[in-house]
Image (cartoon, rainbow, N blue to C red; front, side, top):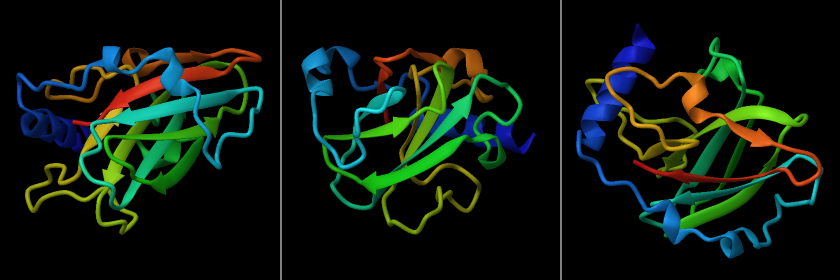
Amino acid sequence: MKRAVIFAAMMLTAGAGAVFADDAAVTEKDFDFEHVSCTGAENEIRVIVTGVKDSVGLITADLFPNKEEGFLRGRGRLKQVKYAAKSPMTKFCIDAPEAGLFAMSTYHDQNANGDFDKTAIGFPAEPWGISNNPKVRFAPPPVEKALFEVSQPTGAHVVINLN
């Protein structure tokens, strides 16, 4: 129930007609970047987070398995990474434990306090996003809406738009 309330709040703060950054603005060439996190590992996921308004704080990303149970919850994540936010897009890599289907969530920890801050009434106070950029309507999206494939040896390319 708590998760549903948080996502209803997310939808309301994003607005019913929210405009997301256009994936078309990110090209395949944009994924040719260098970052300390990119090692060329077999299951490397190259991530571009768009809509980063300010180069302050951290972008936090959580990698989840293809399981509904634990999706978007700390106990369900496989891995978490945090990198300095860079406007207008932050780029980094994260390794999946194996090839397969995965989902990812991100948020811009603007004050770098290590928490996804919320308002006094529980609404998100910091920008957030989910892989595949599903529309959020009163409840968290099912994991199926956020899944992307990591294949060997190429890995995956993922664009996440912050709300």
